[in-house]
Length: 461
Ligand code: AMP
Ligand code: ZN
Image (cartoon, rainbow, N blue to C red):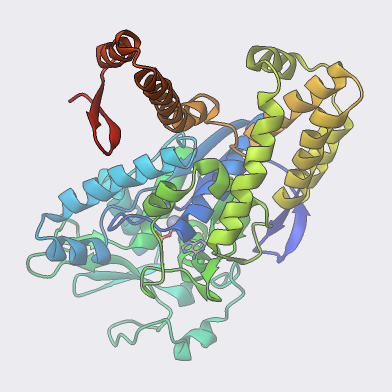
């Protein structure tokens, strides 16, 4: 398998640290609001990475943090007039609900920053003791000049930082690129006790502590959106190297942006739609298909037309599968002894730096084959392979509930049909039948009312 490693800016052969095992970390959300559909791209993509390695037979450990203390959470707490931990808990729950609705498998560990405070403080203490960090009046900074490797992930030179627009001027720092490990709390802000006084940790430190706790000093893949390469991942990696002499991860994978009108979808630009709102319009299958139809590193433009097309493409897949007895398909899918060429092609696509666009084209061919292949067994096999491989991308999780979702429409049509028969009976003055229909409907909770304008129905309250 080849993966594009942001660190080397090239595709590299993936070699796990321990054979047959994958240790994966992807940065999770800062929980100060509902996440937007651009964030969903990152969460869905790393869910696919995890699923695909599992499909290959790897024993995967996937960790994703939840940042539940941050300036933005404090601001939101003031805006909603709530304590910060209530705001964080509210949006952390919403995050979990929305991920579930997007068909994202729960990571093996989802630690929260506030649950990791003693380890965070311990890590900062070690960096200070080693001479890689220094305190200035209750704030602690990482000393970037102390680490020759600083910049090795993002390719940035420390000198670039002096004029770098993203690094705020701060006269107490030794160097503009030095970043905060511990931040002194202002009056009224949440705080934790530390050797440097009351304060709270910096975001870059939280991820190092939480990833290393579950995955070890150095693990296989670290992921996130492309905006995290610098400064977040550079700063995470710098701390790890300072602590252990080893990089935090061997492969760094970053997804491209979801754009809107050519601009990154983001909270600060206020050009976003929450995943929650989009899930009211489209199901998880359509949303996942929309993202995965493009390579994960390419930018994608958000348009409803494209999601609509993805919805249709998924309906085509469902149709191909629905044509067969689901039990039988599951049986074939589970027992497949020899691999189809299609499956080998699917693996080739996925092994080439997660070319999900090509993988989906192979699913499309399978759907076609499941309808058009000359013999029944071949058609069944194609549908079973489509189902199994599609699940690797997280499709087809709503086999039951999808039918259930379509039921309300079907129920409405059935009621209209029955009311039509009743109307015929009334026209024929068959009062016995028309009353029987009314009473039988009432018995199952459907109340009908006749009026000169026609007949209405309602569910009995
Ligand atoms: P945040 O909560 O802002 O730290 O973002 C959570 C994840 O979403 C990170 O991996 C970000 O890099 C990613 N992300 C944020 N905005 C976008 C976007 N417009 N498109 C793709 N990924 C994004
Ligand atoms: Zn992180």
